[in-house]
Image (cartoon, rainbow, N blue to C red; front, side, top):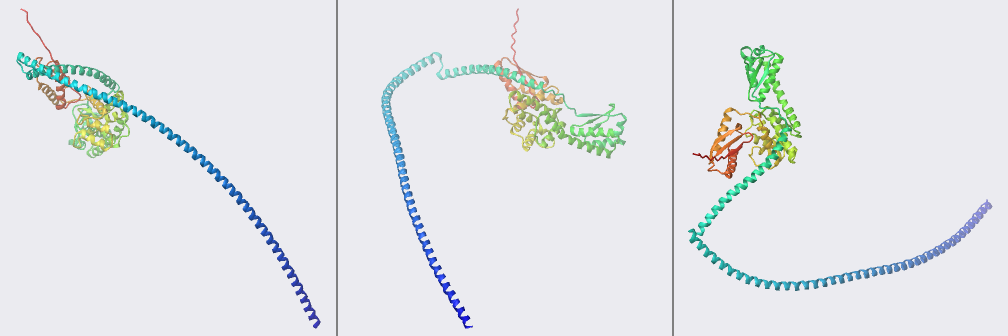
Length: 525
């Protein structure tokens, strides 16, 4: 047991000695390895330091060289700029020297001119003094001559001057009247020729078939027995029909026809349509009459827009407000002096467009203004004011242009026109109204207008007789030859025409003709 333990102890000791030896040998080897590494690191560090120092020297040398090059370039640039500026300054100095020399020369020239002006002023002053002396002498001679003339003629200078001025004024008036007459005649001939060509061309290209409108409508009947059914028992049907429509129904001996009479064309149209429906249906009694009249009224109101659209298409006028289109359609049931207002508006639109084309003006504005010039007549029986005022209010409300507004406001010369299109529309309106068969006038108004026309012409001095002819479209004035000469006759025609324009309302235009006749009668015995 003891030996075993001793051996174990010895083995342990041996292992410890061996382990210690190995540890010591490992430690020594590690120290040598670390020492070698440290030496290698120090050598590498020294190498890096040496390379860095060498690289730094190279960079420093490069920087120095670049700095020297930059300095040399900047120096060269500076010297070049300095040279250029010096050259520019030298050139400017030369220019200034040249200008100074030129200014010196100009100053010398101005001094010489000033001396010449002073000399001339002295000469002029001397001449003025001599002229004043001669003027005084001349005035003295004129006064002496005037005194001699006054003694010879027996008139003072003031009286002679007034007499001379009166004679000159009379001669000037006569001469001016002659010249004015010649100029006016020439202008009228040329303007009238051109105007006639334009107007005739426009009329030829617009063929209007309508004439004056009647205030009655004739409704045909299938037979005379229908008259009794229209009248009804004790006249109840005809009374109911007249109450519903506001139109008088005339049932007379006219075979197979009844007459609807009324000045309101819309009511008359409603009555005509309603009566035709009743005749076609055969059932005629108050309840049925009320129903059919209401339907006819609705149809007529619906036709306004269609008529307005057709008129606008015919006149080639587009983009109208729907309300204006409806009002245009209403014009189909309005008349002026018996003339259908819608057809008249279409005529004016077409005439205005044709004339605007010939004159090189805006055709669309002319057509639009012509179609809308009487739009106020669609409402003038329902609103206060003239149709011009109502029409102007309507086109402003629906945003029509200034040209259309001006044409409506100046159509009857209530306002001064601003655009040439307005003059064209006014001319087209006159053509449409004045053509034969376009309008009619009742006998009493016609006679009064002719009498008023003759009275206006008779009110002028020198007028002997007046005759209204051509249905009042021309007035011929006979004048006293002792009072009115040829030049005064021209002025008299102008004055009479102006007074007619100011004091009379008439469709179309009125021609004023002055007739001056001198008769010399002698008898041989």
